[in-house]
Image (tube, rainbow over all chains, first blue to last red; front, side, top):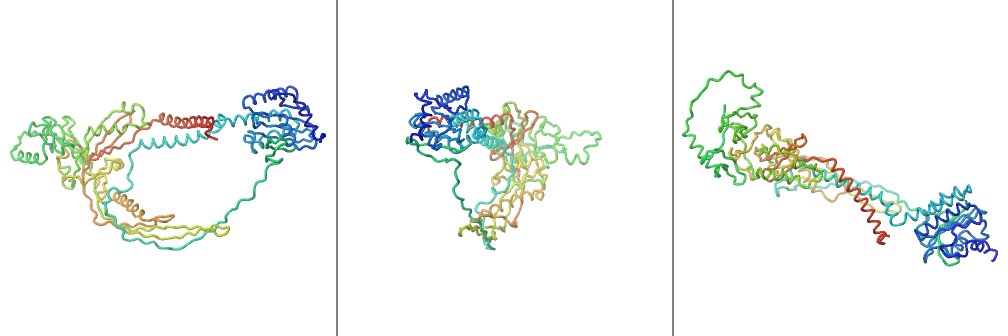
Amino acid sequence: MMKRLLPLLLALLLCAPCALSEMERVVDPSNVLTADTEARLTEKIQKIADQYQFDVVILNIGDIGSYTTYDFAADYYDYGGYGYGETHDGIMLLLVTDTRDYYLMNTGSAERIFKDSVLTDIEDDILPYLRKNRYEEAEELFVQKVENRLEAVTPLGRAKRLFPLLMIVGAGIALIVVFSMKAGMKSVRRKRGAANYIQDGSFRLDRSQDIFLYSTTTRRRIETQSGPRIGGSGGGGGFTGHSGTHHTGHGGKF
Amino acid sequence: MPTASHYRCPCCGAALVFSSQSQQLSCDSCGNTFPLETLQAVADAQASNEAGDEMTWAPQENPGFSGAESSQLKAYRCEACGAEILADATTAATACVYCGNPSILPGVLSGAYRPDAVLPFQKSREEAMAALQKHCRGKRLLPRGFMDASQLEKITGIYIPFWLFEAEAEADCTYNATRTHSHREGQYQVTRTDHFLLHRGGRMAFSQVPVNGSQKADDTMMESIEPFAPTEAKEFHVGYLSGFQAQRHDLDAQACEPRANERIRQSVASVMASTVHGYATVAPAKTHIALEHGRARQVLLPVWLLNTRWRDKTYTFAMNGQTGKFIGDLPTDRGRFLEYLLGIALGIGLGGTALVYLLLTMGVMG
């Protein structure tokens, strides 16, 4: 049991002791980052934390023993005391450099913000770098994507995203309004009929006959829905860590 | 040379004009008004006493109008000032260009050209000018300054000759129609379409369908100021023309029949189609119309024509002299068109974005 927990304890020791604001959020016992990059990432993550009250954690570790990536990430995050607010809002990127495993884990509000499709997008962007062992670029891109996504879900970001759609709707309404105004400038029109000159009460329907001729029948096969879609690799569903905190995430090999 | 006649005030001798308000001839000089019957009696009495002077001149040989010219142009002498009035062959009433005296040109509306009835003007020149102002009001795409800068070049009250067609239409129409039923059989959606041939026959009466009988008056413009209510027309009397211009027809009833038939056919088809209900699709197949008791009569209908000039272009407006219906196409300012287009689009785009932001901030939107 002790042997199983050893990697976790070692990793936790690397960032202890600290209050939330002083905790290390870029932990790199694998030494895949230069000091400069580590500092740059830490600064950027701090800025995100200050602006959005949202935690971003990166852990590059050589080996996690018999842990699964998601259990290890959950325990590291939960027992390390990461996350903002009562729901421990934050996202974590775990890289196991020896076995070349990765795991992206959401907690709290991140489960709503970084849905499956968003995590897939992030994976698609960073995996090519990871496969070439370009960890620094991958992690800088990861932090940037997280910041972009957080910005996009703020009221201002969401409103900005709706702007092009609202402009198209506005242009459509404007065209209808302006062309109806233009139509109002024209009043010289040829009369189609002589309805105004039909004598009141003069119309008499003397003959009315509906003759059935024939029938035609068409048959169309009703398409039935295929089975449920299979989720992405690495397990996209939620799970509960040993601490009792709920998480969601994506993971796999790189 | 024939003399252009007009009605003279028995009181002061000034020219009389027909008043759309009092429906009598009125004198602008002394303010008296006279019914047509009274003036006719006065004219008959004066005619029996008048003996004209004989002051003849030996006219110089003049080649005169060519055959084509004389068929298009007629010369009249103004009874008030003696000036020569030139008018085309279809002008029945006009005003002297020298003294402004209203003149009714003799002979133009005689014989086959004599109208059966006349619908007197009920709207005045002032009402026509006010209607032009109202017509332009609230038009946001009208070029700035059109109302101020455009000049009212001419306003003319004119009787236009119309042919009024009336007939009973006996119609038989057939339609191809379908009705569909759909139900599910296992894995299949089965749709049955029943095809029908529909027959509708009936009759309706058309009364006083107007068709413009003057080539000079624009057909579309004349139809745009409809409807007229010719039931209020009076028996023709030249006195109604005094103070207005008038044209005699240069398109006879036969030439106007195709347009009357076209309008009647359209309305018959529309009325008959309105009797078909309960089908998914209906397509007209054949329409046969037979007109019975068809006849056309010639009536002079009152129209105010207004010409304005703006930026070297003339804009023509028309008002129904009976109902006051006013029509006329107005120019569109391209700049204002774009201003409104961009203004509304940006207003909705930016305003909508701000509203969404506000609602998201307040937590009203999820």
